[in-house]
Amino acid sequence: MVASRRTSPTASASSPRSTPPISAGKGNAATTATNAAESVAPPWLLVDAGNSRIKWALAPAVRPAHWCAASPSFLASGAVDHAQWRTLATQIRAGWWALDAGDTRDGQPPYDAGAARDRHLAPNAAPLALGHGGDSGQGGQGGQGGQGGQGDGFICPQPAGVWLTNVAGDAAEQAVRMTLQTLWGMASADWLKVLRAGEARAGVRNGYRVPTQLGSDRWASLIGAHAAWPGEHLLIVTLGTATTVEALQGNGDYLGGLIAPGPALMLQSLAQGTAQLPTLDATLPSGGQTFARSTAEAMLRGCAAAQAGLVERSHAQLEAQLGAPVRCVLSGGARHALAHLLTLPFTEHDQLVPAGLYEVALRENEATTPDTPAAGTAATDTPAGASRAAGHARKGV
Image (cartoon, rainbow, N blue to C red; front, side, top):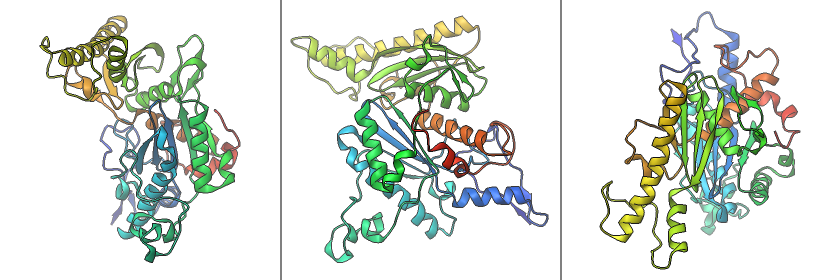
């Protein structure tokens, strides 16, 4: 009889890390211990405070054997607008509860990625509120036992670690810290690690003249993209409040980037800077690529064409500079406004920032855990919680 590790369903045959089946008869102590750690260890909490929203994800405490950064399978994820940050603790607790309850129902160990892969929460979804315990007969939170209500007695375990990227300022970081305190008390103040750009990290070397000036979300995206397509030249386009374009060589050298207004910001600037142009929603369909025959269509198509032109020009420039093919990667919440206009092939990826945060977290843990090979080797995975005591003492990285 052959025993095999359960892995994420999004894993592909091209994944650089894999573990062969182990004979149950002979046994393998290291692999057995790793499987046990992966099953029961609490996950990492990854948080991305962007310009518009705070996004979060729970990631396996151990790098899954067939983890593929090009199509990551996080255990749970969600997002809230900054104005609704008080629902962040609610979302995280509900997502954590779903992992625990769902895996128990399925007869699987807690936090198994395969059993929990589809438990995602929509932006601002708030199935419960914290701090309103009560009995189930009052129709309040106690009555939401099936939703992870406060009255069900569920308490979130401590995470293996907490990592944050933040481009939204001190108020956003404080909101995240208050969320952690709501969930885990005052001790969580020392858990948070804030990713900041530096000269090099996780195989990526920063080409900025002043490396610390690069935004932490862009830095995490570079790390996530390099982990997803190691050895490939990449043009990484993130469309959100701003549109950013990053040039990354296959060897991990970051060549620099561009920043432009995002689709919504372009439309907003037209409406605010002119006397007679209307305010339009960037999510409205532009109607095609031909010249428009109404003012609204002209604005929508004009802004979309400007975005597409930026991407296509940058892609052609990078291919000419490197003399080799370049993969174009589209990310960000506004990418759908551009995807149908591009005339070049592209790959979509909606989780570059958490994928990069996860790679940083795993590599730091692997580097600080005794007898752990360097990241990228085909060795046994390492439980993430081993370095928590040492790592949480630092509030910024």
